[in-house]
Image (cartoon, rainbow, N blue to C red; front, side, top):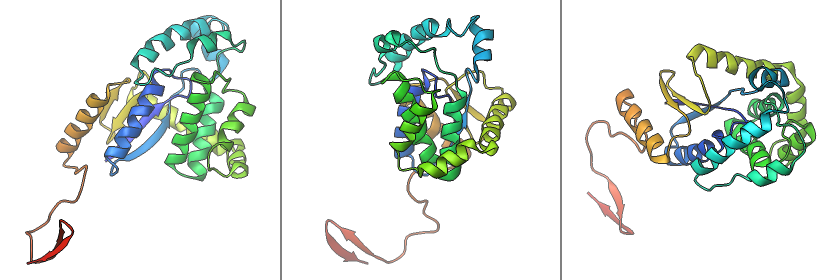
Length: 235
């Protein structure tokens, strides 16, 4: 069962949602989780269109952080620390390309590690994650081959892959992030509580006839030797 997880590195509510989705991935390892880009502010022009200026973004986002911190299970947002920083709120483009490059040269787990690393750098450490120096430092904290990553980051293929995700957002009609799309037809919108995510996944799995855990027995049991309480018991 495919699960597409749409998120942005600068998205406040994506931070708690990613934390919960990692628990989902661990509980239901048979899920095929694919990470997709969602750009809240691809470049500064989008910020100007939405907020009037790039400078106006951070004060507004700090209000979002207060709500997201209440949503976050661990309340990890360093709001006061961010207010003290003098850089403008970062745009999405470089961070999304960084995560996508990791996914292309490695796997979806590597994408996730970079995504979470960038969000932690912004939300907890209050670093400008549109700055390539900051991004490179995050990459170096992972197991990803840095030289291969840098080559892929600079390859036009990477930005094209991100743009294809953004087109998928339009095709699905997704209005906000985070968003989870299951089997290209079920939408879980927003940073839902853990139990709601799991209940929804289980309900969809039942409707789709997908077994989330274990193996489905085909036919009937036959004679076998079994390990029971540390002893071999044979039929």
